[in-house]
Every structure is written in C-alpha cells, then in structure tokens.
Image 1 (cartoon, rainbow, N blue to C red):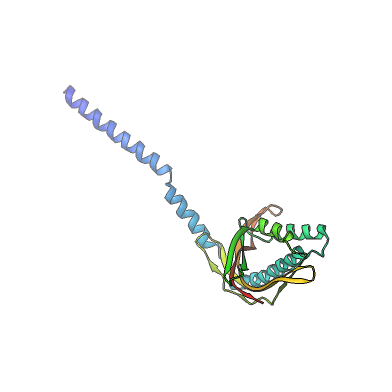
Image 2: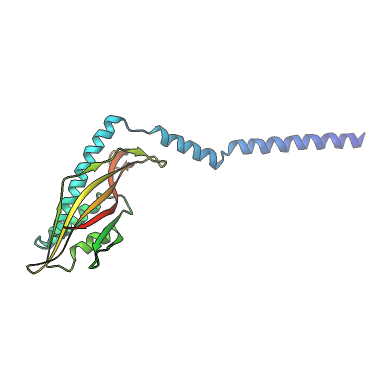
Length: 214
C-alpha cells in the first residue's frame, strides 16, 4: 500500500516538473523566432515606385554636390577655409565606412589602384604634390535601378567620368580620365528632431573601374 502511494506521488511530481519546463520554454521565444520577426518587419518596409523616382533625383543631386566639393578641395587656388568646409560637407554625403579607390597610370602604362577610407582620401586630395590641380567631371552617365538588399536597404550605383590634371608650375605633369562607379545606399535612419525613422540617400564606396591617358 505504501509502495503504491510512493509510485503515485512520483508520477504526480514528474507531471508537475514537465508542465513547469514546458511553460517556461514557451514564455521565452528563441533567438531564431526573434530574428524571423525582425526579418519580417524589414521585408514589410518597402519603397513605392514613386518613392524610388524621388530618390533617383536625390541621388543625382548628391553626386553633383560631391563633384563640386571635390573640385573645390582639389583646387589650390581656393582659400584653405573654403577647402576645409568642402571636405566636411563632402563627408556628410557618405555612408559610414565608405572608401574611395584611386588609380594612377604608371610610366610603363600599367594602372595601380588603391583604396582609402573616404576621410583619408579627401585629406590627401588637399595635399597632393602639385602646384595646381584641375578636376573636371563630365555629365552623370548612368544610375542603375534600385534593388532591395537582405539588410532592408536599397542599393544602386551611379557612373561618372572624372578628368584629373596635375601641374608643377606651368608644366603639365599628369593627366588621366577615369570612369568611377559610386555605390548608392537608401537607408532607414532615425530622425531625432521628429522622433521617427525616414529614408535617406547616402553615397557609398567609389570604385575606379577604368583609367586612361587623357
């Protein structure tokens, strides 16, 4: 009789323990479940075709603004204060961590390409070893269609043609024409003033895709 009582109590205890474990587990969603929920939210935030058209126009404006800053920074005829201001304003156009590729045609005709963080590229542009630097841009060539990435951001690219000329005194020392591909990023960022998230266009990495003698 006593043995049967112990057996019954043991079964009740096991049932209680299983019930507690099941309840605890169900109250704590797994990381996978949380990640899936976040991914679903990202998927649901989409830009309409009309929004994309607006951002294409903004992309063109930002690329042109960057080109103006580059011309100012590179020009040794401009006051230092104006060049420094152009450098600061140019950095505001870029996504954090953006890099710039620069290309140089070597004496043997080969092309050397180097990548630098954008802030280092702009600082170096101000101090190039020429007495005069002239940078020109041809019209914006092409803006590709925007596509949504797995991170929820929208990506595109803009292609531009840059002509660079360096002088020492009155002598032309170096000149080339480079096709550059600018990564475009549309990101949902926090607007602290309005306390809400808004889509913004940023410039990203810039690649030197083709360099020729001018």
